[in-house]
Length: 419
Image (cartoon, rainbow, N blue to C red; front, side, top):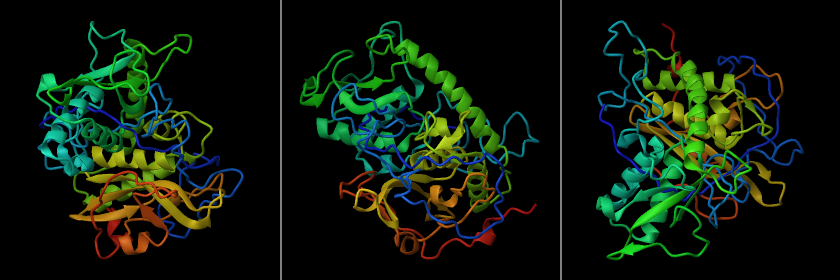
C-alpha cells in the first residue's frame, strides 16, 4: 500500500462532549431494533451529548485561543495500510488463508491513510494539500530527533520543503487535520505556534518570501512537575497509549470477514463498538479514541464519533467526522435550542449516510441493547434533529461543505451478515 507522507498543523476546532451516565460493559444485542429514549441535555447526570468548545477539550479538536492551551487532540489510522489503495482492505500476503476483512499489515504508529480516507484533505487546494501532507506525516509518526527531543513543541519546516502557504491557509490546514486524523491525542492545541518554546499569544510567524517558514504545535505535558512538556517524554507515553488503543481496535476488526459487503462491515463495527463502551465522562480520554478503545471504555459523543470513524478508516470505509448541533431534546440546559454534538457520515456502495452512534447506544446503566435510531439515514431524515457544521451558537465548525446523502436510508436487514 502506498504510504502518504503527511504532516499535521492543527487548529483544533472542537469539543469536549456528552455526559455523565455510567453504563454496564455487558454485551448488547444488535438484533433489538427498538427505539431508544434520546439523551436528555437537561438531566443533571449528563449534558445530552453536548460538545463543549470552551471546555478543556480533552481529546478531539479544540480551538486554542492562546499558546499552551489544554485541549487534547484526537487521532486516526490508515484504514488500508499496505493494501492496494482501493479502500477495500486486504488479506495478509504472507498468509493466503487469512480471511480478515481489514488490512492486517497496517502500522497504527507510523502509517498514514490513503487520501480518500481523509475527507477534509479533498477540500483543500494543491498547495494546502502539500502543507497538510507534510504536517500529517510528521505528527502521525511523532518525528523527533536528537536535535529536538528536548523541545517543548513539535515543529514542521514548510518553506524548506517547498510548501508555500499563508497564515490563513495554515490555520485552515490545521483545523482540517484535527478533524480528519484521530490518533493525534498528544497534541494539546492545533493553533499554530512559531517557536519550539515560548511564542506568546499574538506573536507573528517567521516568513520567507511571504510564506510561513515553519510551524509548531503544543504537546501534552506528561510530567506535571516540569514547567513545560518535553517531546521525548510525551512520545513515550503516547506510544504506550496507542498500543493499548490498538488492542481494542483489533479486537473489533477481527469480527470482519473478507466476503462482507461494506454495509455488513459497517454494521459489525457499529454494533461491536457500541457493545464495548459506556456513555460517561468520569474517565480519561472520553472525547477521543483512548476512551473508545483503551482500558476504561467510556466516551462522550465526540469519543463515540471519533472512535467509530477510526474503525471505518481501518476497515477501508470512507468516513467523515461531523460536528454540529443536535435538537432531538428541544431546548438545552442553557436555554438555547439544541446542544453541540458529534456524529459521522459513512460511504456505503458509493453513497453517503448519516450515523449518530451516541444516540444508538442505550443510556440506562446495565442496558444490553444496540439501537438504530440514527443508523445509515438520509439527510432528510437525519436533519430533522441534527444540524451539521454549525454549533448551537451559530459558529461554523467541522468542514465548509459536506456531500449529500443517498436518497433513501440503507435497509437494516441488508446490513446483516449470516454466513
